[in-house]
Length: 300
Image (cartoon, rainbow, N blue to C red; front, top):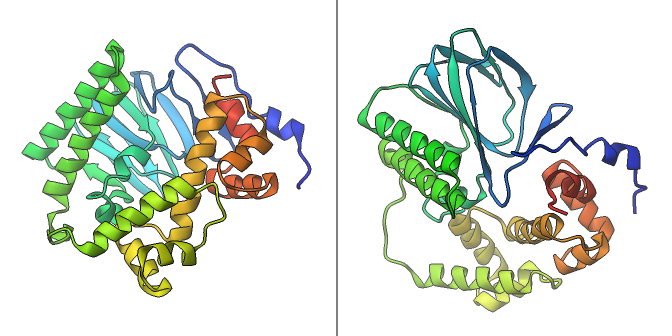
């Protein structure tokens, strides 16, 4: 087990505000959210320059007046009034807004949206910067949906977070229908193979705490190891190992945020087996230790 560095972990503990906070360590930014939400929106009309950084959230800029200049991995976008720039997760970007400009900035965790089965085949398109400035009917509808998200967010009624993601799903559907139609997969009847892969996913979801292997799941599916790997990747967008790790991480993150249970218990309950493996995988995938993650996002 690697030695803990309390000083480094303490550096992740930020000041807390009523509507959350943002934490920057090096170039990596950690975005926090209100209550049980996974979306945040900022309005600003103050001249502002934010140096290059990246985060796990999708970032969307909707310019209201003037222009907001974004530099995304060396490419400059001049996002003018009514235009929209969507930046995918973990992409380095900085922004500059001059006097007389205003914008809404949306940040949201993409797992819920990108986990949709019909979005997965378009994962390459949705993992690229999307600059919406064509003035088309689809552009107008998408802009209106973002404004509806802002209204729901501001009102804060019951289930507002779910309502916001309902609008986000409509936005992704419009993007797929109007901007990526050529890459839509051909619609086919649900095959026996897809039924088996769905059952295999359920098998993994119910046994992630165990030391299950690719051979175990392939045997359950009745496929050869090679055939199952290829089919699982094709239909889910993940390899077996990637899917299992993501499942375990999701369980661990929920326990870190919502409970005060010891790290060793969380490591075992989420299926990592040992705290050393838990710490190593968590740092590789999330960019911080479980302790640091809890300090930033935990409600306890």
